[in-house]
Image (cartoon, rainbow, N blue to C red; front, side, top):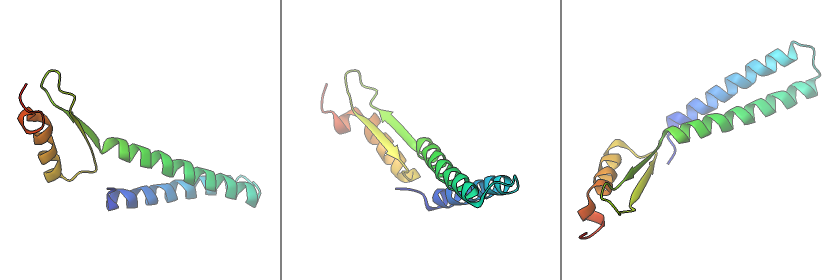
Length: 100
């Protein structure tokens, strides 16, 4: 689940960067078509990059410490209470692995 605040920050940052790049291209006497193409490319590219960075930072993988146990839980965008619950589940072998 994506964070609404993070999505808003991504939108504002993408818009601001696109505006700066568009202004720089426009003031260099480029044609309106070129300016529009550069601005569109900059917005799409920056939005993708910021979204990838945001998603990468929000992803956490917790593995069971028991030797031979392959249980891993990957959390993306989990709230703190959910992170605590999932971490406890992953690290307590008796809750997911039976007796070994």
